[in-house]
Image (cartoon, rainbow, N blue to C red; front, side):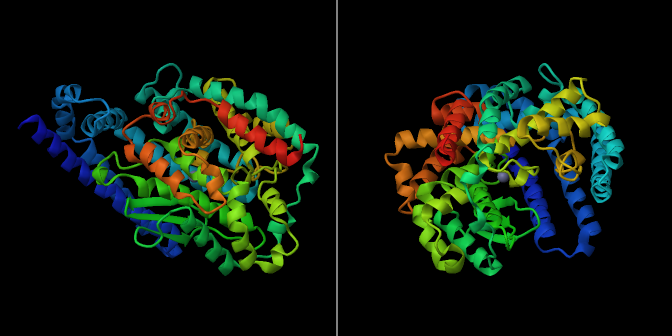
Length: 504
Ligand code: ZN
């Protein structure tokens, strides 16, 4: 076989792996959107079978040989070409997946399964002690996993690299220490004047049908294709999944007395959805047909949720629609007050409901705790106390009950290690990308007030989405913005926006 024939053969073998995982994604979507509870056991079996088939196909010796044979071909090709990138990314993942002993993979899956059950029980009992043994077991296995995968300097690097390829925990620490320096005092200053913003307008009663409809209008307005290539459904936890760039599913959830929850969940997931719909046709059915990393994906969701959806310009455009749908609720509420209400800062326990200013502190707390455990400075047994101490230190509040504290997130029930960093990296990247787009497109933000969102979407299509998973996050940020990843632009954005709102 010539190189070209071998390459095509590799692509066709990997396409089957992609098909298997997309089929699993359909089943997982159905599980969360349609499936009656009784389907749980059967669905679990079906998903496990598909994932072991995909794993077996991907890690077969045949793929290993093809990757080896194609090494010379890859060197001849330009780094940024689709072909070289596909071989490079396939090799990286092949090496990762073949490094993990089958026994460890099975044990981790079991520990995650038991961990989830223990986590639910512990929440029920409001007792961290019920979850602790399961978490200790998960942590021990994660240490083994880090050893098996290998890492640059510290075990946590293995997990940082899994969600943000090419990055290390030292990179993450640097970003967080910059954030902490500015955000902790900013939150403290805002806490002194919380009453400057009244958000009672969004806490009135909002009919769920009308919320559903206005959410769809907003999603459509920002350019997520709801007609031929996407749809929205309801689920307990909002999420986005994709079976092809031409078939992208988003979900939302609605609460009658909390307008912002459903509306911004729709915008957030539609942001993820624009990434998936924006992936180029030429990469379809390849392993490159997906986002570059968790952080890059979050940069898109948060861009549409926050930079666009929580901007004054957006509401100049959309408030008349809001008033049309909800004349009673918005009666006597000015545009400025409504804008302030959807941006209200409130130190709270729950990460997923946090405002833009406090959000990263929630992530920082979790990451610092993971780091302390992996560095041997904190025992899993003391995690609850350490959690509460950090909430006191950074947000000035202490959860009364572990359900609002250490038992809050599902993440640690299935793994422990750099589980949250992508959310914050997403925030940081979001501002860098937006500023780069603003430099190239005159009056970009002013256009939002006229409902002009296509220029921003097209910029993201051309500078981010078109590359799929070809590049690592740090490479992609450099290519799209001409700068290195930095927390500075994000902090400037936050300080400017919220100093104005709170008169600081
Ligand atoms: Zn998201």
